[in-house]
Image (cartoon, rainbow, N blue to C red; front, side, top):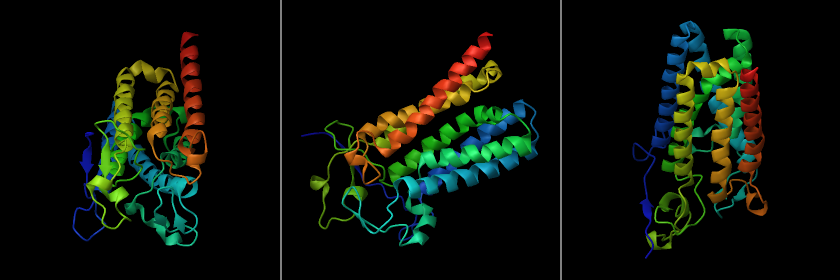
Length: 284
């Protein structure tokens, strides 16, 4: 008999109410932790608190808007029908009001990355008046810890699950595999990789590595080093975990690399370039 973990955690904090829920609580926790980290960095560098308040506003809005739009455009169903798991989903084109239902899950880190980069460019040039790479280096660790808690939120939401496995730490996701099956019980539920947990662990390790470099103040004297490492660690981990994750796009099962991996490759390459450039510049 194979060992496995029964995962029947309910994200609802109050029975019968979809909000507030555990997913939202974890999401907010990640943002709060990120806030205190960047606040400490700003304080050590003597950056005015007013600059910090504006950064928080830019980050929260860009994270939520970008992650949601990323899911809608990269992974979301566009028409009513069965998804890759054989479950019925309402399309965003036929039901655009579903775009705003963030509490139901559906956030994409690649979408968040794009909008955050745009927002931070404006913030660097118009608000803090620093080079673009200056803010990217300092925001990397806070984003990594926020990503850790967002993935834990995906875990309690029973979403972004992995493919089937015989490994003893595999999970049976009750809410994912039984949601549309009448009379479903534990014996009929497949054992899957806890892909969300894998990513959460990878992101937390990435956070620790980034904090190590940040505490070494010389790292900031090599512009792009910390942010480059962030891109390599976070999206490199995402690329690898995708091999054991169910594709979120209907075409993912037909491609050699899925959507998440294809979107991660250019970000990892950009990270390699930034690290190389920072190291070479430091040697001159």
